[in-house]
Length: 296
Ligand SMILES: *[C@@H]1O[C@H](CO)[C@@H](O)[C@H](O)[C@H]1NC(C)=O
Ligand SMILES: *[C@@H]1O[C@H](CO)[C@@H](O)[C@H](O)[C@H]1NC(C)=O
Image 1 (cartoon, rainbow, N blue to C red):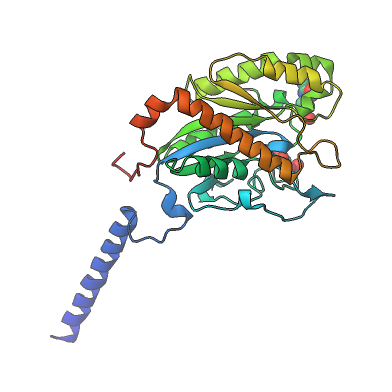
Image 2 (image 1 turned 90 degrees about the vertical axis):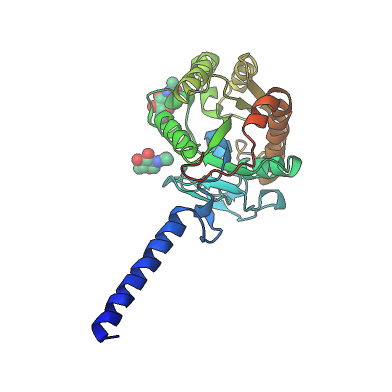
């Protein structure tokens, strides 16, 4: 074999290796089990939206998070999160750090919720959390046409692209609408409109919405907003009442302990509805099915 022949052989050989590596990458094989490898896995998707208590302020005192992550909020290989750059990554506290990015985020209900769902339903498969909450926002800032609305719908649509179903929108918002009587009284109508718009834009007329009923507020009309939330009687819209859970010294934000409790209450409410209303649809979309590109 001449020098020239051996060079050609080497070139052909390395091109074959390259093609083989490309094939392996494309087929989703041979990759380490990192967050990116979970992209094409079927996901049970939950949209987390609202204001600060959904974004998470548990353990935040004087704009500093204490960094304490309770055992119920620890990461799990099958709990992933859509980050601000629209990539699936391992979900860790604080879930909203890159979404509610102008504020100091701490523990919210999302991780406790996902871990509780997993521990109570071992067949659930991968849980994909889509954090969208931004602190201090009123419901008017979330209505269709607003930046927050469009961003949330875009993130939800992106979350669906590589396989999965949106199981529920978990909504914890309204503290900012307790300041004026007019806003508190308009809350019910605005919330009903918002739910109708989400369902239309996500093409999911029966989409589940879990509302957290306020535990606190920025103004005096907490009772009015709570009544509005509890008075929404649309199909597949349910309430989980946060009233009575421990609040930080600021009088507004749920403590870490309270967020863990809330996450567990949300999981119980979700699993309860699923066991009754979704038994048929779950059997057709096996939650553990793995989707690969072109095969699902
Ligand atoms: C953060 O602050 C910037 C600059 O004021 C603003 O444009 C942006 O909308 C804020 N983002 C959030 C999520 O609050
Ligand atoms: C909602 O909040 C925005 C931004 O703080 C404010 O401009 C607007 O007036 C508020 N809307 C209502 C109806 O309270």
